Image 1 (tube, one colour):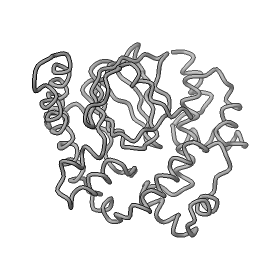
Image 2 (tube, helix red, strand yellow):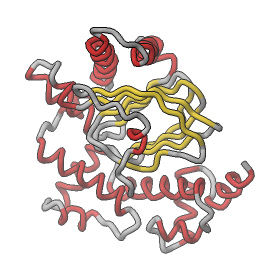
Image 3 (tube, one colour):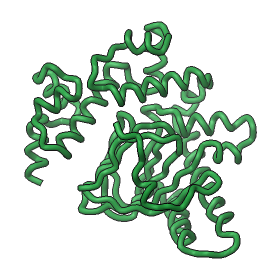
Length: 294
């Protein structure tokens, strides 16, 4: 897996005091392949549409939508129009925590770095308008092209308003208390490590037992906490990860369905096809035919 976010090379401006804002244009031939970084990324769509994937969750976004990529989440972006234009805001977690009262710092960190399947990752156009997020991104875009004393302060203040709106909204979700239930940094780190390992080694023969042993945890303790953190049992998470990667390969490579199945950890082609249809609502062969027709 390529861990490098090549978009950072499009804009040479160094990250300033924990925040970095830029605009970017992608097309179908230049998707952002799966990668990770320790920064929180907020991506606001200003033109076109794209399929975004974060860990094992994927959805389509279009103009006016905003996506949250949590720190250390494996994520990728696949434009579905001829071009897709984004405003991108990177924020470091230490920068966010610097605004917090001491007792709230851990909560900020957990909401922005721990993947949880039922946590919100997309804010639709109406929500962005209601929260004023659209206006703030437009302000950042305008500010980024100006030069005046105090510009850096105003950009940081605007970024802080955006992230505070996101944190407030996340804290009001039904599962917020579940996310805060276990603030153990060591357990959180182990679950993050498990998620990253699965996304890198999904083609291999992975089991609950092997993962538990790898993390020096008991079978039941790992299994229970993995489901609590991701919202899925290990087997379901692994299948979703494999099928999402298979879908990306069907979209972006000429490889045969059989070859893609093997590369995604399925030795039984019939089982792969059944699982693909169960999760995607269409067979892999039909998906490939649809992609070729487009």
